[in-house]
Image 1 (tube, rainbow, N blue to C red):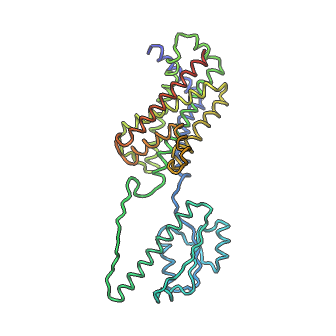
Image 2 (tube, rainbow, N blue to C red):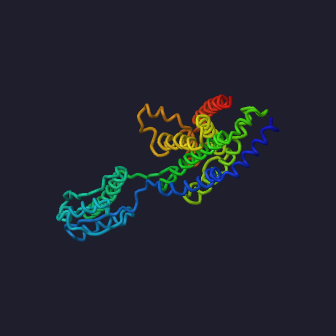
Image 3 (cartoon, rainbow, N blue to C red):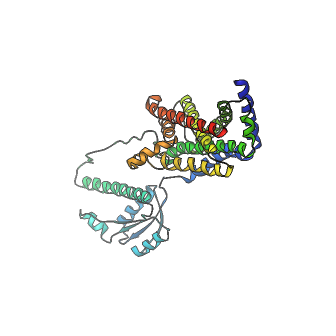
Length: 375
């Protein structure tokens, strides 16, 4: 069997080397997608442009407003005279938040009363607006705590805080969204490149009518499929290694777990993606149709249903069931567990099982469909 299989693998490698498009898809596109999406997809809300309306303009009000600037979350833009000016600047996207300090701010604080401060936030992006409000609340509470402690000191009482907490963030202590998104990008990139490359390769045989010559040869359908898939699996593994290597240097994403588990899971996912590409090739008659179908069947499910961009737990129950049509859903759980958490197989064995079942099922369907196409 291996005597017939090796020539097919060599032939496929030669075709990949001659076809610049497929070679670019497998090598350059993954690195380019990681570079573009890694920097473009960023959920971190920092350097928030802020304007202030200080109706009192006292030392106390300036100290309060300065607390926002020194927090590191906000970038001061300018002082304004009215809320109408702030609304116009928010409408023009010149600022994302504005703080309005009332004229009796310091008087109420000195008398022990509550002072209401108005916060105007651009709510067009609801996630960013929620984050901004959280930052405002944190800065305000910290400043209020400072005033309470100062007042307690004046009456001779020591600093007393009933409850203190010591926060410890696991797996991503810097709370960088890139640490969460980059592993998802790896699965997203591998899914697209493997499916598209495989579908184009086999459809090309149809367009050149060389598939009929292969059909009458002593090579079995299984040998032909394996011979077609092995080169793309090897090149995809190299592409995955390059992407992980680039993720370390560009985004400081370190693989904390086992490289062996990472290799096995990646190889299994690549075989699943190649089987999808094989299925696309059996229902396509031209490379143009194959490219469109492969992009549709790999990009949209991986982007929307895998948990890469949107949490699966927050989806409706029927949509959570539908997410099982993409192998990237299982692979991303494994990938994030290995890269970010550094855990062993006991933490994700069920995802490996699901991915194995999906791969076996999809590969069986694709092989049977491919045999019917040849016959």
